[in-house]
Length: 208
Image: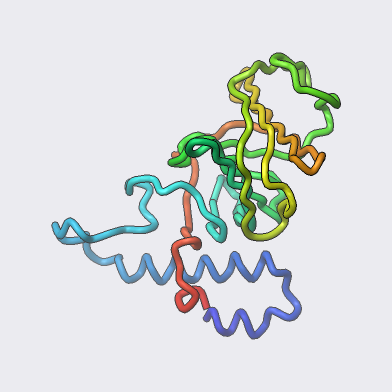
C-alpha cells in the first residue's frame, strides 16, 4: 500500500504523503500485535504504547492531538550541560506550527505559533501578552543543533527564555547567534492527550 501511495505522490503534497505512510506503518504494527497480549518475556517491546518508558520525540514522528495530526519535520536541539529543550517544526498543521518539548521525556509539551508581540531587545522577567501576564520560568544560553527541514540552519548557539502564565500559557524566545529571533507563544498540553506514531523509530526499509 505504501508503494502505491508513493507512486501516486506526484500530485499530492509531501506532508499528506508522509502522514499516509506513517498511518499504514502504524496499522501494520498494530495488526501484528493484535490478537494476543505479549508474553512475559521481559525483552518484548511495544513501540507505540503510551505505557512504555518515554523516549522523547524525534523528527519523522507523527503526533495525534484531538483531530489534528502533527508531523515533526524538523527540530532545534538545545543543550547546555544536558538537555534544555527540543523545538519541532510541524508544517501543514492548522493547529500549531511548532511543538516544544520542554523536558527530556516529552511529558511537558506546548503547541505554539510564532508571535510578534514580544518587544525588541532583552526579554524581561515579566511580560503582558494577549491580556495575560507571563513570568519567568527559566533562561540561559545553549548549544544549538538543527535536524530535518523547515528550521533555521545557520545558528550554533542561542539565548533562550521561557515565560509561563495562567492556564498553561507559554512563551519561549530564542535569540540566535546569527542575530535572528524566534518567538513562540502557545499552550501546554498533557502527554496523556497525545497518541504517537513513532516514525523516528523506523528504519529506511520499514518506511519505504
